[in-house]
Length: 205
Figure (cartoon, rainbow, N blue to C red):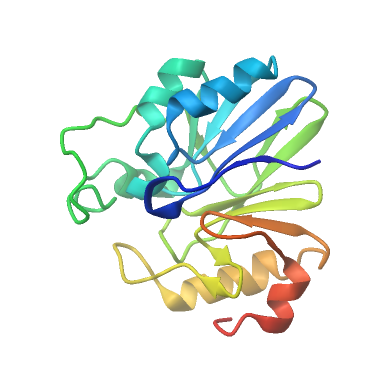
């Protein structure tokens, strides 16, 4: 199973579409809704979830429009509401985004260990605080969507609201590096990698 990647979103963010049995999940919303809708329609998919790995502006900017275009429910970890809903905390004000945008209240608040059924697979929610308090990764069989927790040879920044370097390293060591080394990692920015490669080479963990 390989996801569809929409790269070069806001601040170079990645949006992923993963599908199974004509159902799909949209992971992060930094890319334009018309491009996402075009892919979904061309493949005849039902959008079952919009999953936000965390609440920063470059991952949520188009969430309202994507929800309107697809009808899919928005899913966010319960500990991320404070970031997601506050323009001072999610980066809208800090980075000069259009203010006054009202993000839709999440349809589902997620917890660590939740499993979201999609076609004949499950999307497992892994809570990985550190970049933000409610940051998550999403595991689907042998692939991991790591948001801004883990990148190829890097990790997420921890100098914004709710960030903690210590917590981030602990999340990666205890909840990601314990996964099978062959798991392919699709990060919120940049190129894919694997758990084994990062365990052996990432200088930040």
